Length: 123
Image (tube, rainbow, N blue to C red):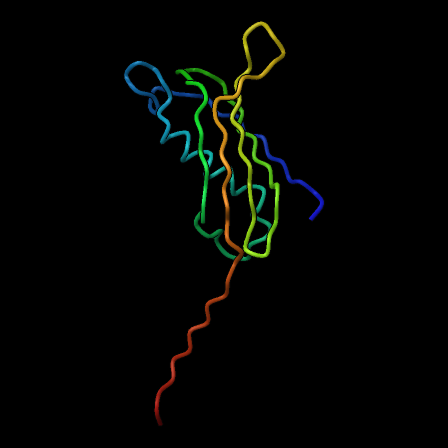
């Protein structure tokens, strides 16, 4: 697999997913990026995408209410066991063209396995 599939998803921090001080709740961000991580690999599964096998999640900075974030998902590796998707969440810095990294994550999705169940009865 030589191609890298990329996805960019805008995300705005709201009061519903923030604590009383206006900080984005990490679990809300994790839930969103876990969903976005499935976007680059949807075409490889005939049925539902299986649950994440393994993951790494790291917060670098806080995000606040009304911050406009970008969630970038990239399929970075296919192995015989599954697919690795890298996630980077960024926010535009004020008065510059630069982006500041809010968090990053790496998700491992197992390959689709077919489970065939056979019921046999005696005649």
